[in-house]
Structures are given as C-alpha cells and as structure tokens.
Length: 381
Image (cartoon, rainbow, N blue to C red; front, side):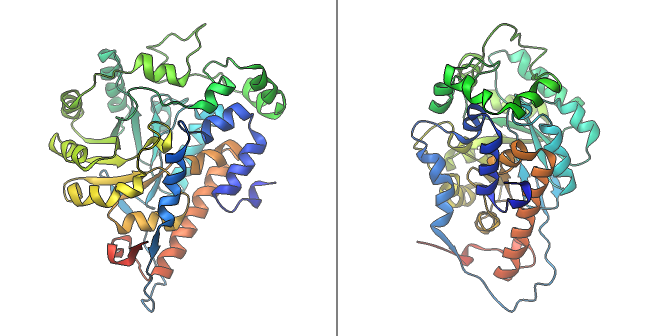
C-alpha cells in the first residue's frame, strides 16, 4: 500500500499501522477505558443528515474563515498533539509546512518535539500554543512568556487533563517516554526496522517546550504519569482568569463540554473554546463533541468563537459542525496517521483530500460560503 492509494482517513490509518511499531500505533489510535466515547465521536455525525439545496450557482466557493482573530483559507486546522517526532522524524516541521501550504493554522503542544520558536520563525501561517497547567506556577508563566516572545497570537489551555485518562493499550505495551517496553512491545519494534532506523539516524528525541524545566534523564515518564504527577488538579476558574488577563490576547480553553463551563469561560474573558473530549482519551462515557455543539453554541455563540474537535474524518462532518455554528474544526488523528505513514507528503495529501471534500460538499449543499450553512439544513434522526 502506497500513499497514493490513500483516499480517506481509514486508508491513512491502515498505512500507518503497516509502518509503525504497534506500541506507537496504539498510542495514536487508542483511547480511554472501553473507548466508547472514541467511537461515538465519529458515529455522532452519522445520526445527523444534510438537506441540500440545488440550482444555487456554486461555480466558485469560498471556504475561508476567521477564527480566534486569524483568517485561514479552510475551516479546519491541525490541532496541537504531543510527541509528533515519535511518529515520524519530521514531526511538527512536516505539519507546520503542510498547514502553511493549505493556508491554515497549526498547533504546538507543551509535549511537542519541535520548539514553537523555530516553527514561528519558519512559517507565516498562524500557530497556536497549547499548554497544560503545571503544579510549578513559574513553569506556567515561563511557557506563556516564551509563546509571546515567539510571536504566537493564540494561547490554548487544555482543561480536561488534570489527571491522565486510563489508556489501557499503552499499559499493555509499556509505552512511555523514554521507551520502557514489555517483551511483546520490544518484539513489535523489531518487526518494523525502518521506523527504528529513522528514529536513531535523525535528531535526538526531545521535548523542547519542557526540557529547560523538567529533567527526564534516567526517568521513565509515562504520559499518564506526566498528567497525574506534574499537572495541577487544583486548577480553578480564578487561576484561568489570571492567565487570561496576563496573556491579554486570544485565549482559548480546550476541553469544554458543558454550556455552564462555556458561559464561565466567556465571563472571564476567553475569546474562544474548543468543545473537545480529547479524542476520547480522557473520560470514557463522556458525550461526543458534536452531540454537545448545538447546546453550547446556543449558550455562548454570540460571545466567543466556538470550535469543535474529536472524531472529524470527513468534509461533510465539517459542514455539519459549521451548520450548527462552529467557527472552525480541529483535526487530530486525521493528520497524525498520514504524518506517521509518510511525513509531510502524507499530511499534505490528507489536507488536500479534506479541502476537496469540503469544496465538493459545499457545491452539493448549494452554498458558496460557509456562513450560508444553517441548522435548517440538518435533520437529526
């Protein structure tokens, strides 16, 4: 199977599974507990039907949007995700370059493997910085200051990860940073030597956003341990309000799932929220993001930008979210699997397919701009 054989999310996932050692594939693919929320994130879109209009003159379509003060050429962006150079040696460099080619935004994580400063220097497209609230308040302030110095305009605080989700696939393989594998996990790496050769012959793995603050030499930091031991479960709305004031610009909370929390975010001055359940990787049994979208837009859509992520794999999913009032949609696994399978060409192919799907769906829906989509064009079963 080659990259040119990939025509949708499932194809990219299949190619990544062929090329990645099982522990790394399962880290991307896995979710919490029984993975019910993970599955519902995508199936939720299937319970909503589109009602197209015809004869609307749709030769030219404009899919650009303005979200969090940033004008981007398509309504999807590459969500910040951790450990990207573990999946492919190009990591965030590939994602940032592909996003720039398609005139959209990308995010860099606190657990990112390329520095936000480097990416800000190299690329003109907007970058958001996603960070976690650490017990070390000095670290939190330092990360925000570094983002501001780098010229980053959008700050995103993840609020649904004060403790790690129960990701049982990772427990079975022993996945951790640095690697500390079970016997079965080690055998899985041995079966994919091409990945291992790439890993050892390229730049040494690091977490540049954290390296100056956390000494991981000789330690084994599982993702669950990072969340549980280093992040501050006492974080509250007063802490966030102080950060919003200190940042003084576009500030977004990622992981909002209730209308009450959305209203509180607007009250303290946040300019956006991301309705997200972390791709089903935190609280299994949580509702899907799409299930909550309408309720939250009704509550705060006139006060802030409402963004959605988790489970989006098709252009029609994007149109359904936009019809309900989302300002943009974040992609996660949708670009991570092609990144893992083929680096920058993989991410570019995935974004190109998404762009083509959105264009086609807009024409078939009879709209030339995304703001022409309305709830009346949807029916729920």
